[in-house]
Amino acid sequence: MNHQRPRILVTNDDGIHSPGLTALADAMREVGDVCIIAPDRERSAVSHSFTINHPIRAQSLGHEVYIIDGTPADCVMFGTRGFLDYPLDLVASGINRGPNLGIDTVYSGTVAAAHEGHLCNVPSFAISMDVPRDGYTYHFETGARFAKILARAILSRTMPDGAFLNVNVPNIPWEQLQGVAITRLGQRIYRDKIVRRVDPQGKEYYWIGGEAPTWVKSEGTDFHALEQDKISVTPLGQDFTQFHAIPELDRWNLSLNSE
Image 1: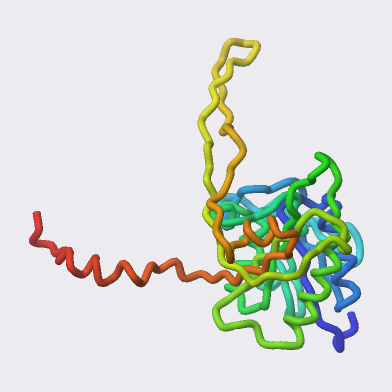
Image 2 (image 1 turned 135 degrees about the vertical axis):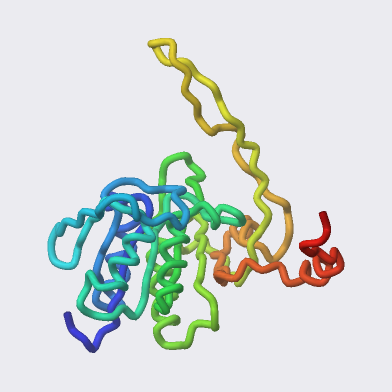
């Protein structure tokens, strides 16, 4: 690798064969030297899980391209904790097939990979595409083009303290975009339920299913940005503390003598 260029780790949760991963890696190669470490299969919705109960197998698929039988967080751990013999300047996770909005960020392996990069003190972002409006076409080239802009901005500036970035891109051609919005997380409304089925042998099995989620309409959110055909950039962090609740809980006067 040319050590004068930024070193960029590209990963995802859709697996090594995802066209979104390929599009992101190609875009990042225009910014710096790229290493791909990706799951060997789809690992969507695994959140920030990592592997501690069995060995992880790694396989090289060519120059600076690796697959592991682990999670997205595992991939970033490999990239930052000794598998590679050089430090990273940036972690880029995606491009995910489908958005990661609101509370999706808790479940998303794509977002977790960027979070893990942040925890390892590497500037990081996750990028996802909204669902196809025609039912089948993903405009990964739109997301990849913005990823280049964002990567160059991150590398030429200092990331805000304590933050990594979650990006959601309208699934439309570049020319139809209406701009970029810095947003907060919106409120996702899930209607999941446990669906019971019976297999041909008469044994029960279950799916987590239900109606498609919706969201609370509110300006300034990631959902609202996509509705306006704008790219949403949301700064996230690891501190889940609800500071406004501390004074109220203090007034509860909890103690070991309250039985």
